[in-house]
Length: 141
Image 1 (spheres, helix red, strand yellow):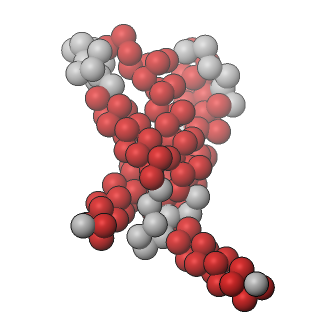
Image 2 (image 1 turned 90 degrees about the vertical axis):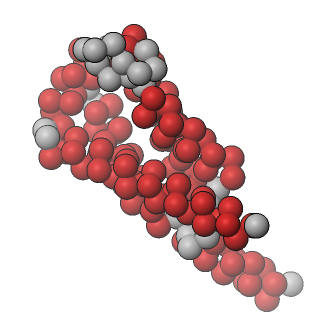
């Protein structure tokens, strides 16, 4: 049963990472300055566009590799909460005809929150690092 849970966690982690990586990449490819102007129009400092896009891009890769899963996922939770509160909330859960709803952001936020609470060790760099540290501690003792 535990193996199935770890495989499920891996699948969630990889999909979360791919989704954020692609969103971060599209922000840079589509003109990050335009995103900064849009952020400013929402009352968010323009430089935050660079911060968010960088976290999405680099964090997406890190999550796929299982590197700093809990920490990166916590940043994703904050980004998604901001997206819901500052952009999507007025449209409602499923949208209002003019704008899509926040159902995707909410789903991704819950997946990220799952990883904050549980991590994801299967096929992750985090698990390799922790095993190496455990061996070093055993040798030192």
